[in-house]
Structures are given as structure tokens and as C-alpha cells.
Length: 308
Image 1 (cartoon, rainbow, N blue to C red):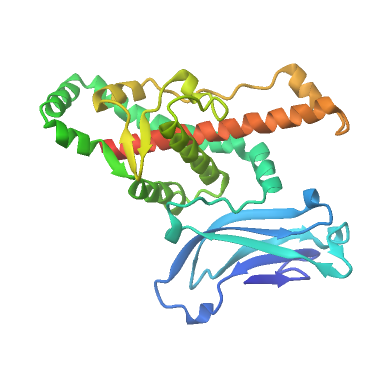
Image 2 (cartoon, one colour):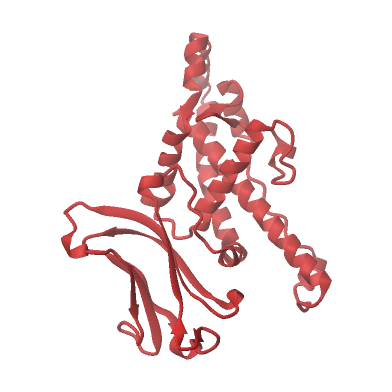
């Protein structure tokens, strides 16, 4: 349930909001759930609604979580309180039980704001992960003795066994993915999972339609997928020796910076059609980038998991 302090919890002049586990005093020892949730105070103008989201592991001693300074009380009368009514909403997604499902309970307007503010943070997280995996593969291939030994082992293996070793159930990999990025790393931005989810959808689309994805991302213009999704399996798209060598060269390109003209157009009024076009173009560009980051991260994760 939503726990509300109209006059603030240990603070003054603020509305405090928390998500709380019902009947927490009756929880058994060892009970816990890892969840992503959003709490919103709704404004008459939806674009001005106040949102906050986070991830938290709820358990007996930490059965509530939220914000002491969710918003200043003085701002509530600026379109939030309508006919003496304040509307508060919560959207919750439990992660542990649905590790292979999308975690997208973010309001569309708030999600766009997250993308605008935190896209660079998502990029840093994805780039760090990819670079770590690439450096490990580079060390393996640069060690000629180990690499030639693995080549001999792999090529000497029965073809049917090789085929079985180049695939893994999507369920298995996605659950490990969630554990890595959220349960262990405690990533606070839900935008990371949004990126991984949209990247997965793009990879599934690419696997079913060998042509195209130009509308979604530019990744396919540079290279074909290293991993494909076939029914309920992640499958390596080529011989593992070729893919491992390719992965050492497959870097995540930097986001192209806006041109001077694009930057200038940000100062135009909302009534300007050019300003609207820029806003639409920038949203589409950021969304494509989010998809690309998730796709490449998921590919490297699946490749590393299968190869391990």
C-alpha cells in the first residue's frame, strides 16, 4: 500500500510518500521481493505530474521504501489539488517472479524525461559491461597457446555436440541478466532494464526478419547479429571461433552529438513547428540509441554466458 505523510516524515513542508508491504509484521524470516516501482502525484496537466521511480528489495526490516521529500507542500495547489482531491498513483513490478518479462511500468511522459536525463548513464553502464567482456576475450585470443588449444578442442568436437553448446534457453539467460544488472548491481535507473527489454524485442524482430530493422536501430547496418532468438532459445549466429574474434573488434559506437543547428533549435518556442520537429527527432534518436545499447549489451551477455 501507499504510505502517506501529508505534513512530511521527519521533514517539514514536504509531502512524504512510501510504498509499504501489507501485514509486514507477519512476514516470515527470509521473505523478500525485489521490485521496481513508480509513485506519481497527478496534475491537472499530465505533463506536469510528479513522478519518482526506484528499485528496492523489500524484506521484514525494510518493508517500506520511498521519498521523505517527494515534493514541496506549496506546489500541491499548482494544479495537483483539484476540488479538494489529491490523486496519488503507484505502479509496481515484482522482478524476482517475472525475470523474463518486461519491466516497463513507467508512464510514457516520465519515461521520455528519464531518457532525456539518464541516457548517458545507461550508456556508461552498458559500455562498461561490454568493455569488460571484450577485454577478457582479447586476453584469451592474445594468449596464442590457450587460443590454439581451444581451437583444437572445439574443432575436434562432434558437430552435434558443438551445436548443442552454442544455444541456451532464453529463460535461463534473462534470469541471469536480471540478477547481474539489478539484484547484484542494484542499478537504480529502471531505464537500464527498459533498454535491455527494447534491445531484446529488436533482436527478436531481427531474428524473425532477416531484412531490415533500419527503422529501429543502425546496428544491422554495421554488422549482422552475433546472437539470434529462435523460439525459446538464444543461438549463436555463427561459428563460435569466428564470433569470439569478431567480438573483440565489435565496439559500442559513441552517440553522435547534436549539431550546432540542433542545439540552437532547443531554444525555440513550443509553437514553432521546427522546435516540434526537433523534439520529435531527438526523442526518436534517443529511443534508437536506447535500443542499440540494450541490443549490444544483450548480445555480449548471451555470447559470454553461452561461451562460459
